Length: 388
Image (cartoon, rainbow, N blue to C red; front, side):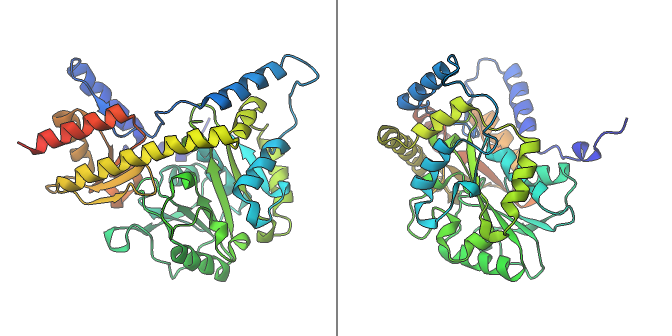
């Protein structure tokens, strides 16, 4: 028996290694109170009206008149319709172009099955690591584009031709965003090179800046070259419920959705009925109000964290239209050394930047998705340490 060799080609710079290091530290120091600014999970519960909608959906499964089994491979029309009305009303998309799924983490790499195996793929460095890992597992070739302080962690348009371009905005990990001008350049590049942009837009609800689009389809020509991915995970606390969606515009290729539907019906049984009923309720007036408050709270936490790091001499990116902050290490330390420093001196978990690519080795990621109590305690510890 031969295993897929790509599965054991990964480095030791992963979230798993973070967990291992934290667990070993806890074993040696059981009385120390560890708090986390590294977690990408949410700290707000699912709002009440969504829970009620899912309870109702559970009851539907107990009666054959309302029971739902197999069938909605691409998502139920009731959810597609509210997404199209609330998120894409001005863009003219149809049910045929939207897919309901169970998480952008898998969607953003499964989509590579749509394209020829020899397609040339590019990502930014630093990047959300699943892009690289997913491409490797599928035996795809992938190139990293340089992102750094000089280009504000937005990659320069390459001279070389690529077929597939990953863009994450607002970015995980850097928290930086592509502006209208940035995306116009990439759309022009994609059209000139007959490329497709895979636009990871799961943090769109955090955007507050006027020069940052909420959807790539706000840019002229995007429907000809871009597939957009979104999720309910961070927006509506669905990290444990798993529901996402993405748009494949017919304008990319007249047959593209025909081919993808054939693929999907053979590889996916559809997101479950109960969670889709919950996702539908996300767009109710009561849920919208509560969800906006939750996101405003996360952004307030990001603002406070940004302030404390800047006040203590750090260079900070992100944290304005995103729950993530990308922060430069001090004293020449690499990102694992700085991880150890924060864990041992402050008992705070951060994420070393090297996990997101080689350009991240002098940075670390901080998440404002933690609870207010955790953020306030972290701020107190940081200020106390630097007062010495």
